[in-house]
Length: 458
Image 1 (cartoon, one colour):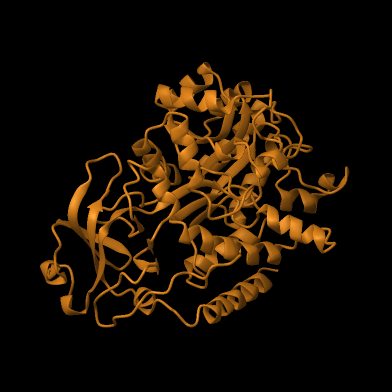
Image 2 (cartoon, rainbow, N blue to C red):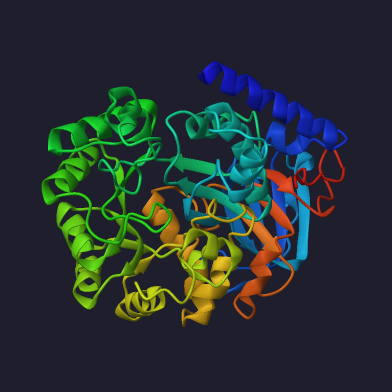
C-alpha cells in the first residue's frame, strides 16, 4: 500500500510542475546560500523589532543576523564564495519566523468527503488521503505555515506524505504526525463502520482503538513502530462523533499511554473537553491538551504548574458553515470555549497555536489569529503562540530567526503586531533555506530569475 501511495504522490508532483509551467526554484533546490534584506525583522516575536537588517542563510540554516543592509561579502567568513550568494530584497516587508500550527489534519477537509459522497463512494482510500494531503500541504506552506503537527489520520497516508516532503518529493511544511488517534471502543476516535467492526483486531490496530492499560500501551508501541512523532488520544468524547464531552478513558489507561510514550521520548497530546478528564490526563503527565473548552480554574492551575500546553483551536467554534456542520457553532449550551481560553491566557498557561484545520479548508490557518486577539490575547502573544511557544511544544529548532536555527522565514507587507490580519496574506515563504513562494523578490546570485509561486489548487 505504501508503495502505491509514494507512486501517486510522485505523479502528483510531476503534474504540479507541469501545471506551473516549469517554474522550479532551482536555487532553493540546490541549496545555494542567500542573504535577506529585511525592512523590519521580528527575529524572535516578543523581542524588539529590528529595522534594516540582513539575514545570512546557507545549508537550510540561519548563519547570522546583522544590522544594516549588508552585501554577501560582509559574511565572507561564513560564505566560501560570497560572489555566488544571492540577495532577497524584503526591504519593504516585515520578516518573521515561519508559522507553526500545532493541531491540523493535513490529509482531509470537508470538500473531500462531499466530493466522495457525490460520486457515490462509501469510503476514501489511504492513497486518496495521501494525494489530497499533498495538495493541502502546498496550500498550508503557501499560507506561511512551515511546520505543522498532524494529530489524527489513518495508519499510512500522513506518514507517506511526511516522508515525501522530507525527501523533497513534494513541497509542504515540516510535519510531525501522530498517525491513528488512540480511542476507547465507542469513543471519539473509533471510526469503525458498523457496531461490531471496532472489535476486530485489524480494524482496532489501523484505527487506534484500544481498551485497558495493556492494550493501550501496545497501541502506543504500534503507532511508534508505524513512525509516529507523537501520540494523540481522546480523553473525552467529541462533538463531530456525537460522543459527548465526558471522560472516555480510565485513569490507568491514560497513565499507560503517557508512560509508554514518554519512555520512548515521545510527547503525548490529549483531546479533551471536560475539566475532570483534563485533570486525570494531567495527572498522567500529558504534554498538551487539545481544545480544552470546559477547563475550570483548578485544571488550568494544574496545567500552569506542570508546564502543560493548551492548544485551544478556537476557530472551529466560530459561527460558520463548518462549525454548524460539525455541531460546534456558537449557541451551544454545552460549553463556553472563550471563557476557558481567556482564563488560561490570564493565568499564564502556555498556549500553542492550533486550528483543527481539516475540519475546515486548508490554507486558512491564519484566521485563528483574529479569533485569539478578539478574545483578548495581544497580537505579539498570538504570534509567539505560533512561533516560539509552538516550536517548544513540537520540540523543533524553528520559531525564531537566529544563528543555528532552521531557516523557516516568511514576510508580509504590513505590521502584524498592529494588524494581525496581515498574516492572512503572506508574500514570501522560505522553508529550510529554500524559497518556495515569492513575488519576484530574488535579485542576485549566480542565477537571477523570478521564483515561481507554488501551484494554486482549487
